[in-house]
Image (cartoon, rainbow over all chains, first blue to last red; front, side, top):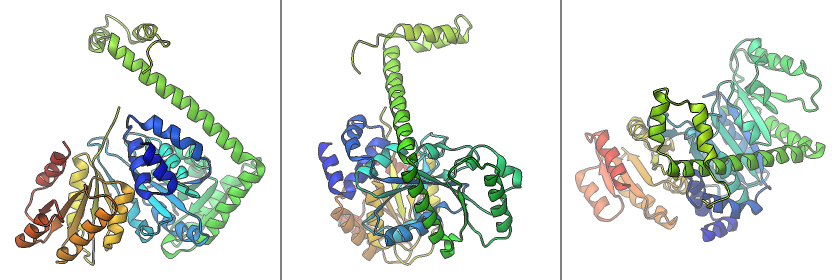
Length: 317
Length: 132
């Protein structure tokens, strides 16, 4: 394992791929791996791209890659597609649009299935970002699953969030709704050669101008990604947002909040594992469940009893 | 806690624009609980091998209907070996004459070859059987 991490830091692509698999599969060495990697992270800038299925996220990533590579930056891409709730399988097809960059040694693309996560990212997206960050990628693009209105995990993961819309995706009330319309640092109206583009752009702008207190006002950029139109403008806007975050001190603030959340989540994760390991050791859960089902006990006091039985200062799991 | 899933790359190497078969197989593998990465059409052997590496797949499935399997399959196998991925299960599907299939398997270029008429269940259980 130590060797894998060393190889990763040296820039070995096979090691990066193997490490992502290990964290994604919740390998027993996962925590140890992340511990070893952590000191080498924090250098990559993370951009999230979200939007409805078929809005053009993958094509936009493909086009953005041209601009990013023209400036000589190295890129990691994490493309998330949904895992079947029935079979656990998935079709990961985002890279189809990006295969022109498959042989560029400075581009590393990884597809991930959501594996039960519902917030638009996969269960292990954040860990995969850390691997690519330690791998030395300057920029990491995270493409979410095709989302609806409320899958907003990306905003807690990315430094800049791009929300991708297409023309005629609803009337102006849709732009006022909470959720995905609130998380954009940049709006992209893709397929801008279709009728209705001007109205969509105007409606988004109107919504944005209702709120005048924010110091960052998202740009609304029309693009036609299959023809490469608007991509240069998007790349410029992306750099402007990064500059804004850096000079206003917000980037440091956002990242501090992220670390706070990661620590909280890690503690909760460990507590949960620890508690269940002990509970399963001490109780026959099935019996208890049957008693609750027969109304001989209730789930509320039973849960308290289970927790009371645990000694947190004993045995290290 | 560990949760391993079989990851399969379904690739269309070469100048062959027919991917109905690849899609049907991809769908069947999905329904058998696997994560299927699909490359799309017209991939070079180098693209296929590099994708297999980045995606860290357990299986590479090549769909070839153009008659170029005797060139493409050995080339992709060699590139995979160069990428230290010699243990990846390499499965070929398509219009492959039986004598060619025997050569590909006996020379160690492919682990298995499936042809029209093979049931989807047979393909799925071949792969899952290999990992149990």
